[in-house]
Image (cartoon, rainbow, N blue to C red):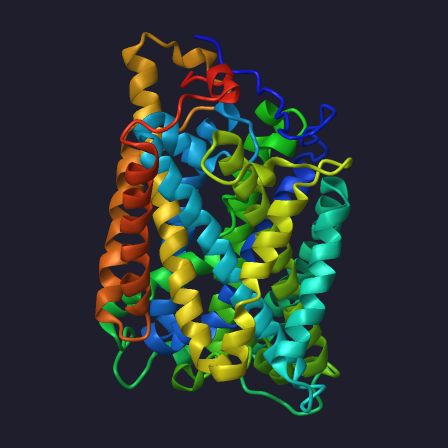
Length: 483
């Protein structure tokens, strides 16, 4: 069977034929993926991970996270090339596991990014108080929301180009941290006026041993780590607006995984080596503390700016994902048809406005308890991200099985997930283990209290509203069969 060529996506309720435009290439995809990943999960929550799991435990947790990301991304590659349509993550699940599962996956992913919007806005507002302590956090939430809305409302090309430069700023900051922090580990701090002794890996040996929380601490923090890596799958969401998806999507996936491994694990090693693990937290970025140690002039202010840029970059990608997922749901008939309306530049404006409005619920948390509710927000988004990853790897498993059962020739697939079926099965097991582990962490267990009932309600609503089989396939589905 031949691979689908990737149909265009037409709008409904428009007097003229408008469609999402394929305006992004591999360069944009890589930076959009990095932009969606590198944010509060690394710049803020890394302190929480180190405090909970210990220095070595945090490094192991991030190595585990990078490995799971690779497993998920190689599964995503086969699906994204087969179904190069916008918001296609839920289509993978719907076409391989049933429309109800696709429906639940779509709303989980939308929830993941809506909650992420709230956490990114809140965290940015908290950091802005360093310079403007008398300005309430919610004011900054409104300002940043207006900026991101403007960037998303112009065109997909503008979004992609802006996200490229946003992501580049924080990548350069992480590289600087790894280089300068790595030198400080060995006692070289040429930018500092005060001499610093080499710490080497002394911080890794705690009074409680190498793993003060044991291997259980690594597993318990894995959800927060997976949340830190969430966003890489945006490559699949953007497939419908990517030039030559069969060529650019695999390239973007490979580059993204390699860069995430170097940037995340490298920075965690430096932070864990330089900062006492029992003093790490989320009230101040550990990146700021490290730059203070290495003696960068105005380090705290510079890094504060970089972190805020990083958080807004994630929010930018999150808002993009939310709008495309609502658009895709509406195209399938599982959301109001108004979400399919596009502007003349191909922007799903109604979906964009609604997603941003729901994301601004973060204003409530920023007024009530910004620094405590933040962890809960991260946990909820983490649950949704992991659940969506589980749907991706399961969809690849069933997709490939159906392809082979129908006599498909693997050589015709433009991109193939390696080591099938080991890769999707191992990924599913590891992701399930991370969900189970958070039941033992009082700081994250709220994710289960919220996430599991939400999934159940999605299935219940779908069955009551659309029946077990759902709606008839759309023309887009018919043009994009399971391979």
